[in-house]
Amino acid sequence: MKLPVLTALALVLAAPLAAQQAAPSPAPAPPPAAPAADAGLSGAVSDESDWQDLGIAIPAFATDADVPTQASAGSTAALGYSVAAVITADLKNNGLFKPVGPDALPRPAFAEVQAPAYAGWRSRSAEMLVQGYVRAGADGQVTVGCYLYDVALGQQLAKAGWTVAPGDWRRAAHKCADMVYSRLSGESPFFDSRIAYIAETGPKDRRMKRLAIMDSDGANHRYLTTGQATALTPRYSPDYKSILYLSYFNGQPRIYIYNLETNTQRLLLSSQNPVFAPRWSPDGKWVLYSMAIAGNTDIYKLPSAGGASIKLTDSPGIDIGGSFSPDGSRIVFESDRSGSQQVYVMNADGTDQKRISFFGGRSATPEWSPRGDQIAFTHIAGNLRIGVMSPSGGEMRYLTDSWQDEAPTWAPNGRIIQFFRTARGSGKTGIWQVDLTGRNERKLDTPVDGSDPAWGPLRP
Amino acid sequence: MTKPRMRTLALLLTGAAALAACAPKAPKILPPDPGNAVSTDTSGGGGVQGPVPGTQADFVAQMMGQDTIYFDTDKYNIDAADQAALAAQAQWLAKYPGKKATIEGHCDERGTREYNLALGERRANAAKNYLVSLGIDASRISTISQGKEHPIALGSDEASWSKNRRAVTITID
Image 1 (cartoon, each protein chain N blue to C red):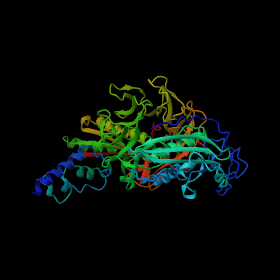
Image 2: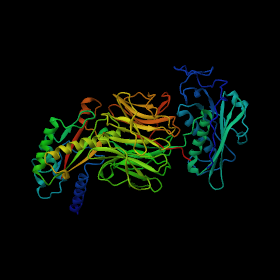
Image 3: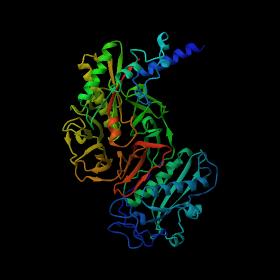
Image 4: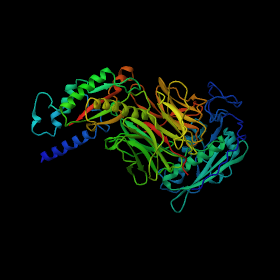
């Protein structure tokens, strides 16, 4: 699989000339530098610009020959349509852009892919054009080419291609969406990634909780456990080969490592004591866990290749969780040593423990952004809400405002956060996501209720 | 034919109980144990009135609600009502010195999941420590945290939450 090398050039090119055909919607709070025409919908990648005004046309990808493939989407022509649909959904569902997909657009001929009919797209008020092709290889592999054009300038902005096994065709679509997103926003990609979470069913007092995984858009969903034992708090390993999670398998809460290649699992460590809150270091070499001895919980770290545990905290209170800074040098964690749950930072060897949350109420479940610049957490003051703060505890702001939102997890690019929301009364749960502006919030589609999302890194 | 099968089932059931009311089952304390049907005891099982002395069903019946103690939000201290309940539990445990027990710690839904796992463990341990202080051998009592995963009162209001912040003692048949 070739990787597109993407540089984050500032996007001066994208000055919108014409309004898109989408109906203008006089929404409140237009951003400061709103484009002249058709200002409106909120929903920006960053606070400075309003990408939803950018008309992106994504017609069905062309093919040189419509031949059958092993892919679930069917022949290369059918695949070309589906690839464009996945790209459209990626860009739209995250509140980033307002793309127009293959349903509403003519499919370009194969020869047009590298020589767009700019005039035709201009007449459709498209400012950006994503087109590409799907080709079946003799070896059964599928090649997807992806091109991004600035229609107004009549210029190619980016291109990339991927050869994938037929079963991985959606990954090629996500890679293409990532290329477009990165090129237009200047941010790092994130669509080609997976999410582990807990699938929940059943009444409030007897919820069945199963370990499950899915792509970032909810596709390729799979249950990993049967639900006979309650599963909680999964974390994907950085290489996607295994998942750490808590299970009541054998009756007691312990951490297991689920091996995704063999579909087997083993205890992280055997202990007479309850062990919970598993975490990986960014390089996958360390595992953090929390263990209660005689009711007192402390945080430990353990080499993932095996070895002796190192105790990192030693307070009489509950010290739990933990999330490494991206460079692995520090750990943000939760402790009630002050009398209530608060967020602390320490060095990765446990030294220099300092409280950073002083917001009133309680602060819990801190997660360090993969960019390093922010810490997401759950703030408890009556309701539970998702907030972010700087690593020194400054610039706290809420991203959500609901009855009970908890357990944030970061998109690989540090621009979007997922969390789970519990409904008052019924106790039903759902996975939601919100961007850093707090304005683009949506519920993810999961087959059943979901909690404890854990977003893995960008796939190579 | 049916006999051995029954016995296996009974063994499995006791095994499950020994594993401390684990699993995704509801906490087992509430409705008085259906009792004899599940018992491995082949001789005395037929009694029609009242649970067999020394069984979990007997414990539940004798405790009259005092098999459970309750906590304030985020707290794990043993107050006067808890002391009375634990004293009653200790009395029963002293009467049946062969019996072991598991204490399940629970929390209300208004906290984060992992913290509640730790808090439930702390509550269960507070109850255990008090029983030990009353002379019950520590080796007879195990603890397990269920965090906020198994509420007993299903509302989202203070009345329900106060019932869910609890430690439940379950003796092992």
